[in-house]
Length: 452
Image 1: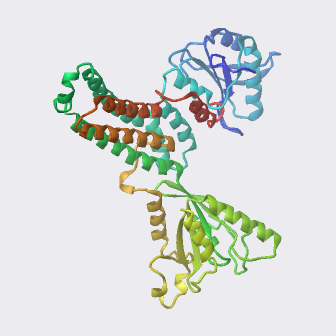
Image 2: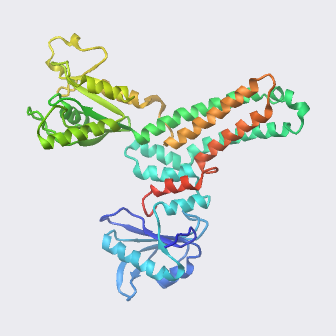
Image 3: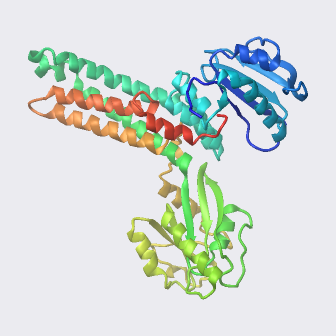
């Protein structure tokens, strides 16, 4: 079926499974005739109507609430109908089927992933950064991430970026106006204090980048793998960090055959901890598969915690772990079981010393992970950010720096100066969607859930 962004669309807007309430959402141009045919009555805009939902044979599907939001005062900017009933899967599927049946003559179809939010963006109800914040708010795994996502959705990030873009545009307009009067080019930089204005722009941009990096850490967190020989305390460390017994801990080597994953939160930052099979030579087929998966997890990790038994500090894995470190992976050597040491001074200064059993050193380990993540507790970001936002901000900064170089040249080539300002401005436009390619829009909205 061909897809058009003008087709009426429908989807279940609540999460799969049972619930007290379920919502079926419809959006499209001129839904009035469809609503009357579906509900056999007109609806007062923005008023809750309690009424029966009937199928094609006039049999009751459910009793619920219907809400009608005419354009442009709706989430998508189109006419929107929300049917709120009981949240059983069978009930919602019947209601969805009924909407599609009635809507067939109007060209209605099932909504694609993120299509409601995509229409809100295309109809200028929200910008692209706000649209992404919708998904981030749904996916937020901590209170801090939810607060930051809500701030992004309210437009805080977009406003900061837009103000900076407007300031760059104002300077660019002055430069391009001056290009029409060559005799004034030499005096332009002094007359309009262009260099000092550039310094202010760079300072503002740097502040946004710092806060955005914090926001990206809040959103993406760290992927941490616990690696080491059997019985060095990997499972004990996982349990200690998680605060519950997730992994089996015994004296028998090779207890962990497959990975055990747990997400914890440090200062609101999500940290995915993966306990893995102990690394050693083995003829056990199942354990060998687990070890192979361990190396696979290590290859994808943001941080590898190489656990070593502090009572036996020489590890035969040192060579292999050094190879991991040489591939630019972050490897942190952690000496566990320090409570069994008679002489704690034997621990290398390059290692962290902990006891997963007593909890000694765990706070320092958590602080180290936050440091690696780039988290600064005193500078919590007021918004969430994505890697594409950081890339666009960095590109914008690079063009401002090039503009500064042109301003410092003796010949002061103002046309190049103006071009760098234009490129810097365009990079910021990619964040809010002013200058975003269609293929990027498709990728962004395809990651949303259906019904949002």
